[in-house]
Length: 355
Image (cartoon, rainbow, N blue to C red; front, side, top):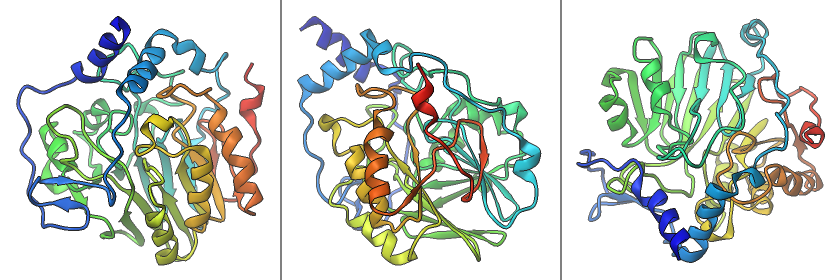
């Protein structure tokens, strides 16, 4: 049982604050409990099997090489002149995992930018496979940072602090502004959104949409802040970013598809799953179903190829999901890390050459 004790220490011992932060109290809703002052999913999460959980954590610490690529992944140095060039279509640069830089309607937006070497409260696990394709100092000016939730693999404190002296604005779910202000971001630079709330950035409409997940960076703040996906809508294009989301009952994906009609491009989580934490992340088969439910025309898998946060082979997520998505008649795009692309870019199965 010794290994389980060590794994439990990694899970519970890292990153705890001595005193809890103070969060606003929100109106009661179908995802916020006024009594508990916490957000929740439509159906209570199943209790995780602690032995299975601890065994998975142990494997990620002791056998981490089993879940990482055997060789460096092919990447491209982002061509920022091409990225910033005027275009009617949104352009993207994937930085691995769920970090996505986009240029849309004259706005440069960085979604869930994470550059950390480790996305665990302790550095023994969650280590990055390789350096990002560009450093923060090499990026063009960022107009907005959009955050889906406060987990370490989506909210990187060092990135937030890097942008303190900049003019960058922040669009975040309810409660996340508490952390940003604690780290030095002025409140007037932060917009907090509840599900289905929108904000207008120039001619771009950004809407926060439901996801099935949880939040917390310590043992004192579980579900004190909201989690979300986003829809980016111009006069000619609709883009969906799922954030982190379990499949749950699938209702939230169906409703997103019904409300918005269809999406030109859908960036949907596809990786770091395990049946033990089925209420946190989707299995690849569920990802494929979610892509269909939101009525995507094109699917880009994210939440993979940068960190090993589960015990599946690093490329298994796309090998399992892509055939199912294609069978549904939906196009699949798998850009290389660092590649500038739009909805018409042709991509290949580059991960199969990593040996």
